[in-house]
Length: 355
Image 1: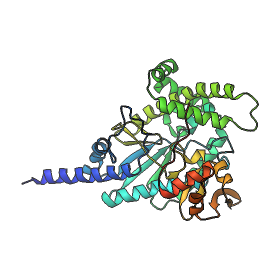
Image 2: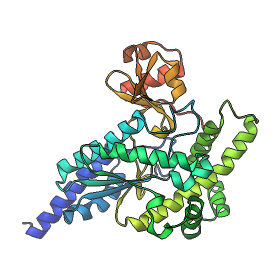
Image 3: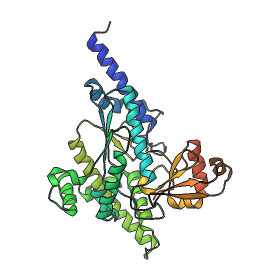
Image 4: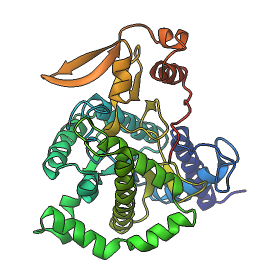
């Protein structure tokens, strides 16, 4: 017969497993290649256990489960991918997704959850070539969107709010973060050459190449690709430094990521909604209503479909697919329609080949 303490511990463990299961339902998984470090089953018991161990402490202590998510940096500078520099329906849908996750956790664990979005835009804005003024405006609009969420569980934390960096300009903040928390670039390059973080490096390189491949760019594709590869190391270095800082700022938290993670890693990759690409995020795409369901895709993909642009408060917000989603399924021609068909069916299309 279980003692009262044992029964309490058992209930806490059960609730923690249930909450971890909610996260796994929304897990962003890497492309299956058969390589070491991949989950062997879905849902993955090893990933669930890794997260449940962290969650259980909050449950036992009857505290809100704190989840930390470095994300929402700022809109891509390439207008073939996004509608503008400010958050729009793509971010709004993703924030709603996080708000609904917090509500689901509250259904299992009455104290609920605290989801802290730790925007990394200021951390590497110079490396991704987004002006700091655009980052400031993006953060301001994002806070307005967060304040309108019904659950009150989502908050925003940025580099500007770090007390240790008070009084520094933006470049000074980045320099201080690098000096205190970053791995040297040479060591990072060596790790990638040895096979560590290769999918992440390739994905960041692809994003930077796409972001720079605008009508205004006058150089060669080869030069742009070399530049993207160089800057990818800087972005990864800064991202890891930010993650290291956040681990100290929010100790014991459930650590989420917008990037796929290895099996049973300390961090868990999480989706922010349906999309046409495994690595696509709200700040690299637009929201498309495909008949009561919002799917994220690049702006050029949306414009290749029979979509209508919707404005709100005098600003572009999202697209609406004029025909029903089934028209995308029935039309076998075109990458965008193929991707929408997969999204409408709840499956992921093949991701673009990475360098």
